[in-house]
Image (cartoon, rainbow, N blue to C red):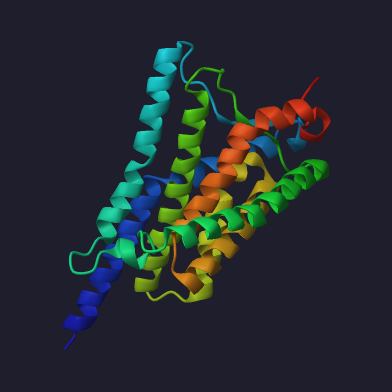
Length: 261
């Protein structure tokens, strides 16, 4: 009579172990490093707002090898995404369709993603600047890459990678797996939003708050519509605007972005 409960226990343990392994290979590790980073930053004598965090850095002083390293880093960052897709895949009913990753309504998904990027992006700038004014956000430099013919394409690919990695793992994968573990909607929503904020802590407390709010909105939209593609598009568009547009904005408004003259 205890066999069903025993099997359920094994299944729950297996799912929990799988989740921990996936996070340990991807954004969970990033969150751990970010927590240590913010503790390190807060215990320094330099004010948080006077510190700098650089996102896209050069990986070699030789342009050809810098490009090779950049592409390799992008590829291996996407391996955990391929892993969770593999884990979720069901031969009788592909989970990509369940996650709203399909080509059934490209125009609607595209417009929804662009609209969401505007809704998130504009307040996001205000949160960043407000965080710097309050001294709870570091000076974020989205790119320190030298200007080569491949710089902008690599930055665009980096933005797409971030959209895929974060939305597929944090929203698509975790929402599915935590639901299978019997977690409620709000518990899932809050936990995944805390995770999203945590791996941005290296940018300061303001980044945690902004990304936590973004996680709540994205998670709520996914629970309501079941579409992951608009979230991926919105995330990628926001990051493209930041990665590619920042050098122009920083040069045009140096005082606003805290760039030395």
